[in-house]
Length: 197
Image 1: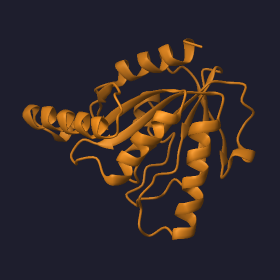
Image 2: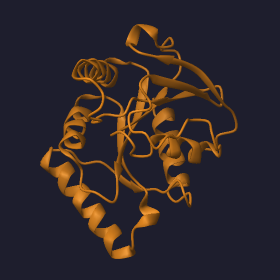
Image 3: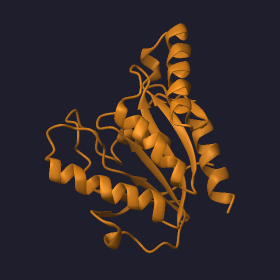
Image 4: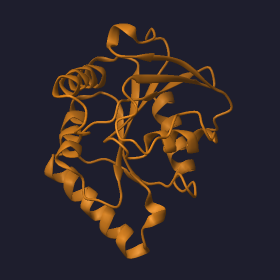
């Protein structure tokens, strides 16, 4: 698979505002500042398709991008950022849970975790939540260009242990927006998940 065309369609704060479920969807989820926007830009070979910010919590809506006229990439609001009000966090959480468990057109979920740190309690909560979705799920380690070979292997083992602690077993894909590692594997897995139905 190659991204030949991508167009921003709309932002949505809740399920009612989302596009009709007539195209398969691939969702990108992870804690604030984990690198979702950078990964999206890397996959699409664009510099500024998704806005990248040093400020955590920048993405506060579900952003839908139509890819090759045949699917949506969905950038989900980051979780775990303390400066967002408790009320806003609770609202986002309800919407994210509903989206992951109720959205019929959802085909794949890429759960992004920063390779430099062990998965957080919220990351593990998402791992548990993803057991409830019918979509194919992948754990995507970001920013791996910043790790040495031995540290990378430790990061993968730590991620595997976190998944096991939640009763989950997912493929783990090491990526870097800086040097584009993992790009072809991710695109292949996305294509397989979308075409499987």
